[in-house]
Figure 1 (spheres, rainbow, N blue to C red):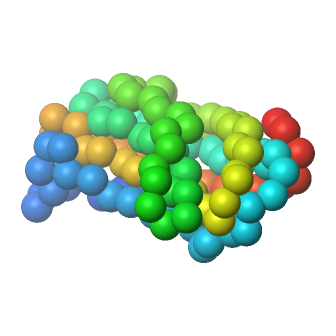
Figure 2 (tube, rainbow, N blue to C red):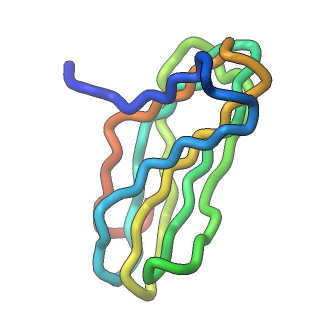
Length: 114
């Protein structure tokens, strides 16, 4: 039960359009584990990316996945080592048509490596 975050790929969205979701700003610290579930289903899926926005300026790629991953929720974990204040940036890029949806759910950040 609960809610998930979803990108709508129907018109007026166009191929290559980007939707971004930014976390609050977090303080630097030791290693942390970012965990989330993703759902990428349909013949024209684009790309889902996770980046670290450091000190509001530098974008550091952490993870990226493209194409249909099946009609299922998949868990993923990424270890980050922030040396300055940071935000997580989830980016969904629309594929060739509306026939493909991208969603994320249950995003958590915990101390320590994954």
